Image 1 (cartoon, rainbow, N blue to C red):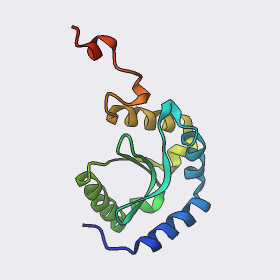
Image 2: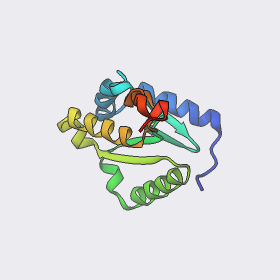
Image 3: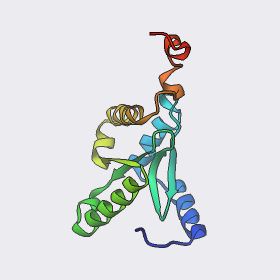
Image 4: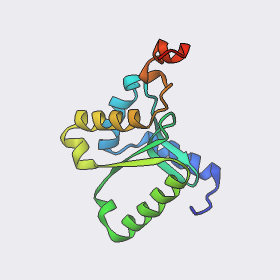
Length: 139
């Protein structure tokens, strides 16, 4: 169970984080804000008592860009609790090391798109319209 946080405080913190992104988050946002493959991403999006770096609601997918601090024991345990809570809400989390985003943001963007597309319902616009035979009940 996530800690209880005042919603107004959480929203103010998310706004502040949007104004001051880390370099890797800013680079990745430049690629995700253009709605690649028709996928809409939100940045610094509050979910429960947490703030996701990026969130694709259609795919119920959170993307986290983890800096060095995420390798410290206390932070790892916190990330595991957070990921577990999000999983209980039906939300999948994919994590990328900040250094990997800095090395090749295009590869990370493509991995994000693949992860989101795998989680989309079949009728989602990014997949295109359903085949006519399926719509008409033909085999």
